[in-house]
Figure 1 (cartoon, one colour):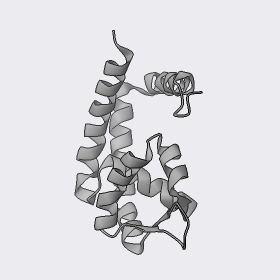
Figure 2 (cartoon, rainbow, N blue to C red):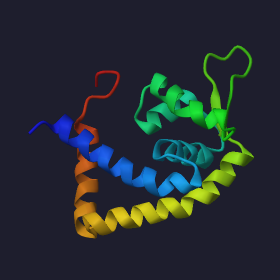
Figure 3 (cartoon, rainbow, N blue to C red):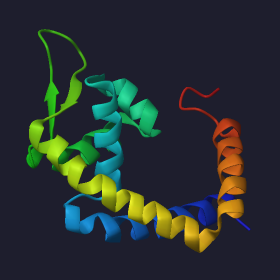
Length: 139
């Protein structure tokens, strides 16, 4: 069976679960993860954020657009710098505060459905897949 198809199908199924549980908090899983990463750093350069999320810059721009529109994230382009940095706003921190308990609920549902032992095996397998896959620079 095709690895790409099956991994994407699984990712979409998991994303649906998290999106449904996070919906009352006003975030989708992609926005939640981005907010968590930005907040953990305090301020993060956009190329690093894209790398940490495992996405390209254009996908990052699309993922950040609703967060910026809602006033949850601020992107700053200082001076003549070619790249900006992102930081979470007070409104974004409030959204995180609302959504972290929901995320914990989604994670608990996911682990209950998959099983703790299977989830632990999957984490190891997923890490192996990420390390084996070619990186954006071809290495």
